[in-house]
Each structure stands twice: as structure tokens, then as C-alpha cells.
Image (tube, rainbow, N blue to C red):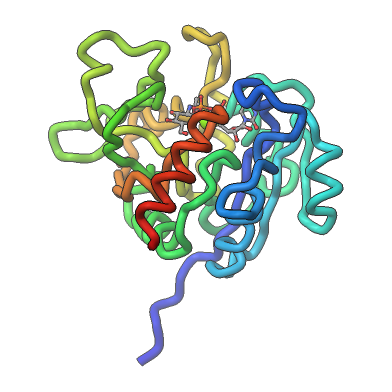
Length: 247
Ligand code: UD1
Ligand code: MG
């Protein structure tokens, strides 16, 4: 039997942030993990999901990324105004993409191809957006997933903006999302920056999509696969845990 036709996938990989918390001149997404640059892991996984298009969003330190990956199509985010603004930088390339847009963060490098497929497959009917969540042992500064009574996702609150009760939520945002191409850029155009960091948060598109009557699904993944790397301590800790997990 033939597999049902699936929607084509375009991937947007965010790598424009300065990565200042790494305290290093080497671009954050070029730091090696398991012997390869973080970004290399993501690009290899994308090759295995047969992404029809890949757009890498670069900004601070982009010449390093250009040198390391000259053949990957890139767009430039001029100023690092936040993750929603970074995704908007890809609109010229993907504004009329007819399929599913998969958004990945360069500092969340170990997402398995199967997980990418699972997330994209969650889009159906009135589900136009799916977010990859996880339950880390230490919630650190991750965004928290606030669920609706029906188990779908109501909104994401960033750690910096969360109240005490919201910070007790254990279900966190990995940063990875799948969004129907035709709704993504109109939603992004409505994101504001009145928040604790004064940034345009990608995570705000969840509440906006719901306000439009759409449903947002949560797909869960294991902690090791979706750990975000923002500092050399986090990088070293993940390396150590991976070494323990894989004999
Ligand atoms: C982000 C999420 C948070 C989530 C966490 C998972 C937002 C607002 N927050 O927080 O909910 O739990 O990831 O690891 O999305 N980037 C750009 N341009 C910008 C800003 C960032 O390209 O203007 C890129 C960075 O290079 C990085 C990625 O986007 O690859 C995420 O940015 P980062 O600043 O690390 O976000 P977090 O604070 O980790
Ligand atoms: Mg991060």
C-alpha cells in the first residue's frame, strides 16, 4: 500500500543570535557536540527528513557560518530582535511555501528525524501549529507550556515573564515548532515586544493562533534530545550525560 501523501516540509534554522552566554569568539552553533558542530547535527537530521527547502537565519558572526556551511541557503536578520523577528527574516524565501514550516533553533541540535516527522504529522484539521515540549529535571530558563483543559496548548510563557505559579510548570518549550505555511507569517506580523526582555518572541504565536480559533498541539520528546545549549556549562553537562547514556 502506498503511504498517504504528506505535506512538503521547509525548515527554518535560527542561528542569528550572538550566543553571548557562551563567552567565546566561536559562534554558538559551531561549538562541537559529540565531535561535530551543533549546526551539523541539525543539517544531517534535516537531510534525513527530506526537507524540500532549508533556510538558515544568520546575523551576528554570520561570516563564520558562511565559511563552515557555504552551500546552505541563508537569510540575514540585521538586528537580533528576538526569535519571532528571526523567523520573519525568512519570509522573502518562504512566504508562499505551500506545506509545513518546521522551525528549529541552532542551539537545540539533537532533534531526531523521527521527532521532526512526528511533529509535522501533528498538523491536521484545525491544528495549524504543533510545539515540541519536554519535561526536564531542571526547568532552568525554558519557556513553560500552559495547557488548556482539553490538553491542547493555550500559550507559552517565557521564564523571564512567568509568575511564581507558572514557573512551577514542568512542561517546557524545546523551541521546535511545526506551523502551516499559510498561517505562519501573518501570525508573526502580529507579535509585539511588550515583555520582560523587550524582544519579539516566537512563542507568542501560540496564543495568537488560538485567538483565531485554531488548535495548537503538543508533542513530547525526551530531555536529552531537546536540551538547549546557551552556555559552556550546559554544553559540558549535555556531553557528559550523552557519554553516560551511550556506552
Ligand atoms: C528559547 C525560547 C524558549 C525555549 C528555549 C529552548 C523564545 C522567545 N524562547 O529561549 O521558550 O524554552 O529557546 O531552548 O523563543 N536567535 C536568532 N535571532 C534572535 C534571537 C535568537 O536567530 O534575534 C536564535 C539563536 O541564535 C538561537 C535561537 O534563536 O539559536 C534561540 O534563541 P535563544 O536566545 O537561545 O533563546 P532561549 O533564551 O534559549
Ligand atoms: Mg537558547
